[in-house]
Length: 331
Image (cartoon, rainbow, N blue to C red; front, side, top):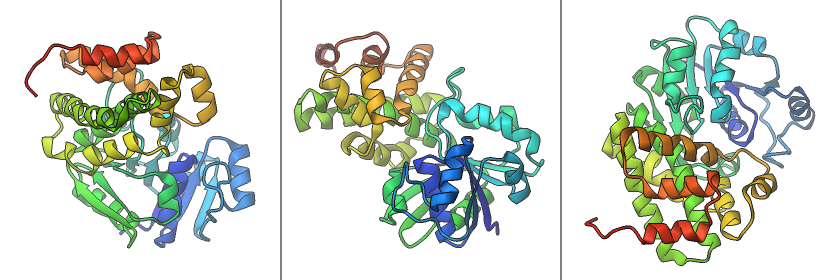
């Protein structure tokens, strides 16, 4: 069984998963592209920027050199933002062996063409490359603080999913496995869009009824798109679907929700993004999801109105009124 893991992406989520794996006894190497940031991690023995106060275990090392990743292990977990996912794989490929296993905890689409991330792995490496996605309701700070968490690991290769589950599973971190890679990917990407919508509604002080309706109808939108792309309905009712959607729409640890709150309170997107100061995946996901809905002629009204707020300058209150003004129909 694999007992070495390299994690690419030294933000909050990559760091939290590296800490988790190391606490579980796995030899862990955390890579980041910014040498200055990695130098601070090594010096401080913690990620003060993203997870202050959480000390690294002894078996967690850091590097800014991809050559060290290749020498360390063939089991890789990518935790970079979706817009950097393909570029990171392309950088990594010259240093990787033919036996590389690639997992990712990135939630989003490939912004170049709206493709799913498993398709990007197949394009850059090969369709035979063992691959898996890790997703579910999980804030990095709570995982790093060893608070109880449950996630889903989806892979078409059951042995690889089992290896990752073995590395990450602990008394406080429960891992479930799935074969529905597409469903898990779609759930993780689109829930960020809906979290922005829920944040907008709460920023406008529209109440708990509105938030509940947005979450429920938002889940319907995830299911519509997910089924069209090849996902399984049951996946969207599980941790990587409904579970992650509820978490991201209702807790202010969610950057996507906080962006929506700021927009609903009258701030512009530039100011709101700067104040949050971290990657907000739902912004790009809104565009990619909107285009996919148009491509497949799928009714996704919440996504559409969120897209128009983000990209067309639509007033947030008008967006909500547009949703309420839709023609009556059965649920």
